[in-house]
Amino acid sequence: MPLLKVRKIRTFTLLFCVITFTTFLFSYTFRDPSLYFFKYAFRLSDNFFSKGLCACRQCIAELEDDPWFAERFNQSIHPLMTRENSALSDETFKWWQWLQSERQPANFSEVVEELFQVIPDEVLYMDASPERCRTCAVVGNSGNLKGSHYGGLIDSSDFIIRMNQAPTTGFEEDVGSRTTHHVMYPESAIDLDNITSLVLIPFKTLDLQWIISALTTGTIKHTYLPVMSRIKANKDKVLIYSPTFFKYVYESWLDSHGRYPSTGFLSLLLAVHICDEVSVFGFGADQYGNWHHYWEENHLAGAFRHTGVHDGDYEYNVTLLLADKHKIRMFKGR
Ligand SMILES: *[C@@H]1O[C@H](CO)[C@@H](O)[C@H](O)[C@H]1NC(C)=O
Ligand SMILES: *[C@@H]1O[C@H](CO)[C@@H](O)[C@H](O)[C@H]1NC(C)=O
Ligand SMILES: *[C@@H]1O[C@H](CO)[C@@H](O)[C@H](O)[C@H]1NC(C)=O
Ligand SMILES: *[C@@H]1O[C@H](CO)[C@@H](O)[C@H](O)[C@H]1NC(C)=O
Image 1 (cartoon, protein in one colour):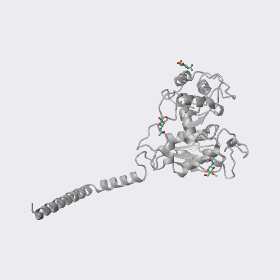
Image 2 (cartoon, rainbow, N blue to C red):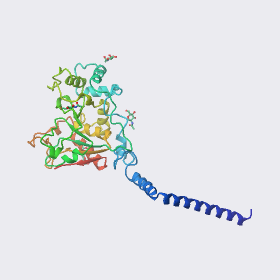
Image 3 (tube, helix red, strand yellow):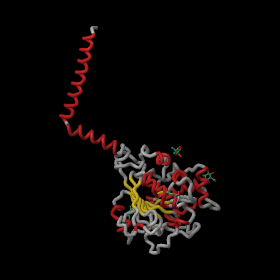
Image 4 (cartoon, protein in one colour):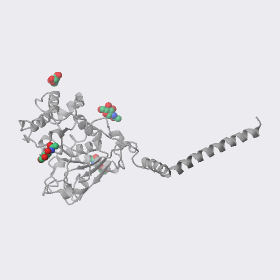
């Protein structure tokens, strides 16, 4: 073929393509410009904010933005115990039994079986999706909550997680009044209303026997300390913190610092796993460096940070690091 003809064909083809494309784009835009704009805006926001993992502005489970977080976060370990995940590896069982060793522990699998005849056996909160935006407030017990006026902010969250002896009555202005989850162990237990989930952290087989007893017969009155023999709580909402998850928090997040993690740190990691957005209140010291509880008058009362069981400094460092990396929001009070 003569060179000129080839060029003509090429030019024609190119022109044809350009015209087709422009016509298509124009008619599309013209027919429904809002749709075009919407699509464009959606793409943009998708890329800049959620990347589609959840419907919040930022999703905690997003791993791409931080290698430190990605290395530690393991979503395949479920924070709550079910019949199915209740069997512990030998290594986990040994570690868990060593926390508060018992002289003659009952048969673990038999106790678990009995437990799930009293409380529900459900897989909860593993419903992450691009449509879900679950906001959570983890409320620690620090005196830095006093005079903070965080009550409204805390109460506006979907989940509000409190721990141990934490009262709300009389402190609503600073700590809020709603509680969806109350994390405790037998020796730190308090009565709850019937809309709050009791989240039990078991440290020994006896703790699982205790919750069964406290919700039914009331026969167990003593562990290594006297404990409440009966507890007011909705037994259809009782949840058990998984020993496997407990060990994962200790090893992956605390690098095995301290003897085991504090209730506060365990509650924080529970939230990191079941929520899309986590706000943290009442962690750390107050403005004077005191470590008391918000309901205690005496600033010197709470020397609990230095018990030697928990590495409070290391836990606090990891918590601050999570905040630095925009995984959680820290509200430091006063
Ligand atoms: C996450 O945990 C599971 C179960 O323990 C384990 O098999 C897997 O290797 C872990 N993944 C990472 C990335 O550590
Ligand atoms: C615990 O009980 C189960 C079921 O009754 C039994 O198969 C298992 O051998 C027992 N374990 C121990 C350590 O006794
Ligand atoms: C919770 O308790 C209130 C009264 O204290 C009662 O009216 C209500 O039915 C209870 N709800 C559930 C789910 O048990
Ligand atoms: C906490 O972080 C500070 C500052 O990065 C560091 O100096 C300190 O040693 C850390 N403490 C612990 C217990 O890791």
